Length: 144
Image 1: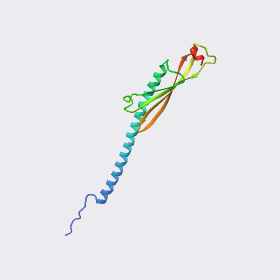
Image 2: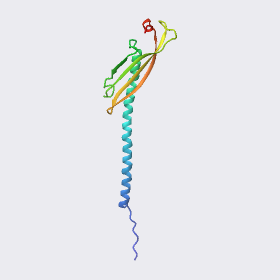
Image 3: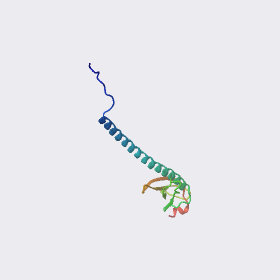
Image 4: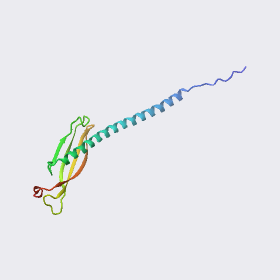
């Protein structure tokens, strides 16, 4: 009497090892990509926060009629608004454009240069903004 053939089902040890190795490589790749994404998102969040604070600061400085022209002014940001990081700013206001024959009461164009800085990962990060506003010339402005 002939015995019917028995089909074996399942995986061999070699197939299991190959599948496990492939899965391990895939998981390491995914985790590495995820780690890079989280690091980039944190860096962009810091940058976005600094940009928003910079825009607010340049608006504030451009509206300050007593801001000294020609000298560098510096300040810091409260760490609570910087997400716990140290940060600050420096600004300079300069005359950008004057009328050809200026007289008191004429309008001139001033330029505000603002540099924002913050510490991130032990490195100082910076970016610059600039803005312009019209000002009315006073007699003392023409004596300079």
